[in-house]
Image (cartoon, rainbow, N blue to C red; front, side, top):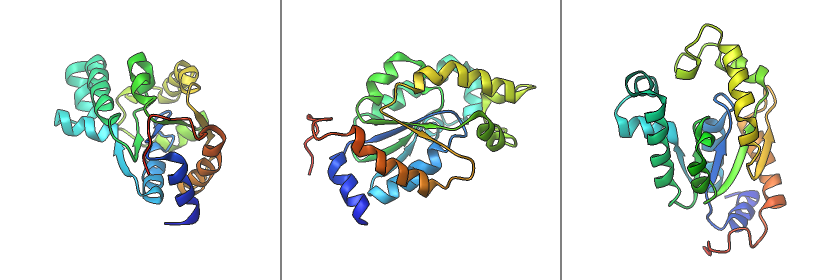
Length: 193
């Protein structure tokens, strides 16, 4: 384990890191790199939801609707909040339900804030997002971002994503920022290592 990762592990004391932000912001990709560097487990809430439901996210939305999906999403997040030493990529709408914030606050919440132009570029050919199954996906993305921005802003840390920025560079920036918010008494109940 590299020196920066050892320092992060000592500072984190095993707390999990929750990545929030819009679809296409890179939560899964960044989460995997971060988990590998820290020696953490990686979870993606959308993947877990698909496993629990034995259906794709699109099928869940089509057969039982968004409200049922959000309920299942909250249950998965509740289960994950009991874990330590995990990097967790969440769905873009996880911030919509107030109860989910109580689960997110079990760890460090990081907002991957990608500008609309980057999201549009990344999601142009993606047909797996049920909320983007509309005629004008760019307008829909803009609307979703406007609706959620104030919720994402409640994160402990905000990382501004730039077009072309590598996941490793984002993790390095995150490692630099964590000490600015994670003081020794940030999670006093969590006395690991």
